[in-house]
Length: 416
Image (tube, rainbow, N blue to C red; front, side, top):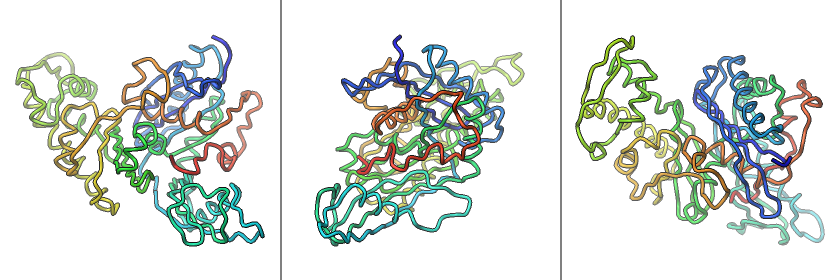
């Protein structure tokens, strides 16, 4: 294939890494997915690095195999993070315009946002994302784009996500070891919400739930804006663990059984036949009814959605009418939409993949496990210029946030 700029979105998941590599067509403005990989990583747990060598090896494997397939290096690497160390909250910023013309510029907007970021955070934390929720000029609220308008006082509300500097730096080191450069790092839920929700859904009110293995991410959109986001430190791997214990089989066998036969709601059980279950040592096989699997999966799934319900109640937005959109690997478990309706009280729930009109791709990469990685590639594409780099010129001793600097690169002023 012809040499082009390769954009890679690397999703640091729950015990695995998933990557999508794509190329941008500057004439049509579309993004074409060229390759993708998803590999397990024992060095990660809940999106946090526990073993830097194992994590580096997984980075080398997933990115290296993609580069060999495409026969060229990754040009831009955007990394999506998750985990219980992330915290999100809203803040308010102001900026006085003292110039005689009073015409508001992009620089004025950026300064108002910088002032909104000037708030106390934990000593070991760094700001990852700042998403403007809306502007006000001289106390007039509801302004989405104040550029070119006149005023003396510019105000902005922002949604800020912070993360542990220790965890972020350990992740950066793991990615740097094989010689890769991080161009940007984001909270994975932010681009995911933009990729799986339409603007109309965000305007009406929607909640996106990313059901991961060791974490679950929740984002609430009201009036087209991300109002609340949170990572919950529990995920669908608990279901696999329960099956392993209840069926007395290995974790891998339990995972296979969950994916092939598992259901989480009685109406999703089509027939109560028997299925073979290998013993823990793999030497013998015993048969169990499918309803027994339901009896194991259903209580744990209900518990997971109870965690989400409590999270939504704490958000202050539980009374807003919302569409529920489920994504991530856990969304493939039959019956999860029923739990979302019953426990969260939603009237409409759907499974969500990346909107197909945003890019071109082979069907396999539209699977939920690739959704966040694909959304990261889209985020990089929509964020503007792509810069080439050479591994020989990569400064491994440079600070992490120095590498991903460029204050407003990939920065969406209007959160759309």
